View 1 (cartoon, rainbow, N blue to C red):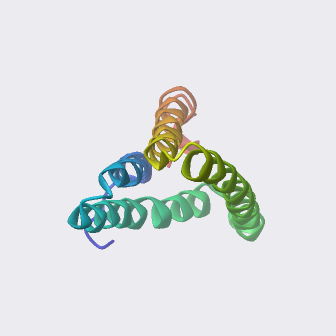
View 2 (tube, rainbow, N blue to C red; view 1 turned 45 degrees about the horizontal axis):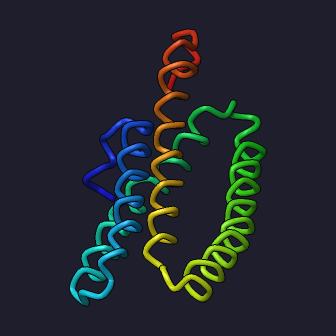
Length: 138
């Protein structure tokens, strides 16, 4: 985390999200025991990049008097993500892991969702953050 402390929040969040996506997709090679370790390491580095920077970004854009409210909204969004990811992962595992016996597809779908999130962050950075007035940018 200390390595990425000097990086801009959006750059770090995007690269971190891409790294977590790659880590998830590498689970396709799970039959190779060492590849599971590599996948876990790549995912962990991505998570260490993206998570603290997303919290820093929210705290940075919040007006001083409303920082707690902004952080509350951030954690509500996180809670909803955890809720729906649990439902989604259960459904995907039930279908691809149990019924179809193709868990590789499940891991690729999770990696694809992460990459779609990274693209959404890039678009938000390009069309919203960069076009904001200078005083409103982070």
